[in-house]
Length: 384
Length: 90
Image 1: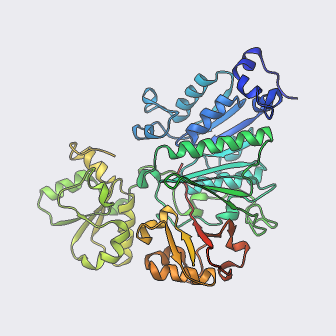
Image 2 (image 1 turned 180 degrees about the vertical axis):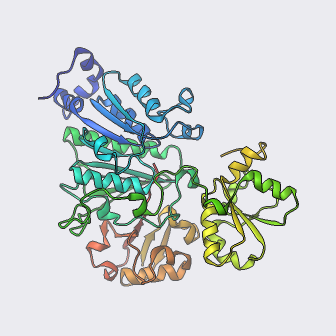
């Protein structure tokens, strides 16, 4: 039984009702639908806004985070008025401003194997708006195990991908990406940057696919991967096929329960300031400043990319971008004390691991990176 | 002659190139040509066993080579290969 539409709703959605492929029936389907949006960031912003506008009756939002100033470059559902607020609260307010007639449920939690079933249970469709591999594998496996379609979207700098993974009738995420890449190969948006508009395009494509699924119209991206490159303005489609040996959706699945995804991927679920190499290997900005003031002979190595030096730099640091470290480390003296730094402490932590495996021991990771130096030692430097 | 599209995360190891011309009668030969031209790519594409790493997806046109003949898939002039990266930003 589909819900009725009030006169106000008929007025609100008149432009939908005028399209034969939607009509009253279609709009009622949208009202009856429920969608879980995992992540209210770059992808989640346009997804949540457009689903609210379209009249999806019930939308769930999952996000553990608060609105940060640097989010506003692309996470357009948030604003200055909601800085430091919970992202799910901020998003809900905006969505209800667009459309007060919908129900928005909020889950201010990290989406994990412990809570995923409980959170996803009431929803027909899952939309993956997350920003890390472990949660993507979790969302996929959950969707397959619960028999729900998972509308996938992901971004990196200028590239986007979109698909619909529906284990019941096509491939799932693991059919195409059976294993995650090694930690450190694909930087997060915080480290690698992203063109702000990119998640806008990709998220809107995800919302489009979700709406098509509910209305049952058009050709969905089940069994296809859309590859978008904003620089080339190219849209390529490749065929995805179900892998009969897929560990989750194949004929003899090995994964029949949710697993530990951080362990599976070898990386954490959130891309926050995890720029800590572990107690013994870290040095704080304050400690480093003190040691330099005392005249300690320390070699500062900056493993960022050359274009980042223009933003902020520490005097006396030598630039060796992370990708070149392995080839240049023969120029370093392992008897010298080395402090490695980058923007936040993540790349420098990987640099430390590279040097460690080559036998270097007298080194530290600048915890929190140059941003921490700007906060604690030299406020004349910008934070980015 | 085949063109190979390099995804953004791997371009730093291909001197910033987005498209590279490679020679070879099979996908495997074309990949060998690729890593000969850009040795820095090798460890990102191949495991120690010289097999393609499982997170590297290679498509000939719009078909995954896993569903063709893998690295033995024959190539003809004008074919387009594409490496599809694993990306997770959101």
